[in-house]
Image (tube, rainbow over all chains, first blue to last red; front, side, top):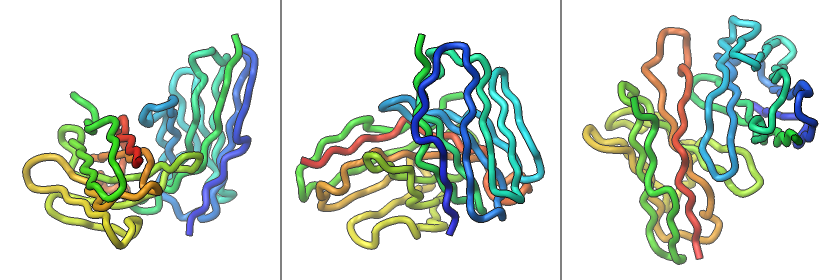
Length: 110
Length: 118
């Protein structure tokens, strides 16, 4: 059974600082890994999708890496802004099911 | 291109009543997934459907819960005789047909339906 862990559970940083969010998973036989953002009371917004054959994906200030062999992914958010405050979820796919971590709640202080 | 549409966004039911949650996938998407997010917990897979077929319902409670995705119309998640423990956010997601990479492609989620059982 796939277990996904996200560390830390919560993070508070001043505006402008870079964010580093970690995700680990127990079963390396994955198809892809997806990072989502969830705002309070809202749905999930897909941020980045990394296929199992890829090592990283970038979109604007976001960069996500994937090391399948060690079961780890890291999401980097450069030059954080108050609008980046949200919960960030990591999910891995083994077939068609997503296994989610519990998320990292980020607060960026102005 | 409209995203995944879920309704109602908020639903209040008394214990013993029925709850029906609807989900319209993105245009061109033929796969629908339902996930449940309990307070202070992560999202858990419930069921995976394609048109007129339940592919995997291993995450659904054996009793009171059912799901369908008819040929026409939205996917429906139905909860009969609701109990307080059913209070949660229920998210629907859709994806396009498998592009050959194995497994599903990028998953797009709706805004969720938040069920409160009094």
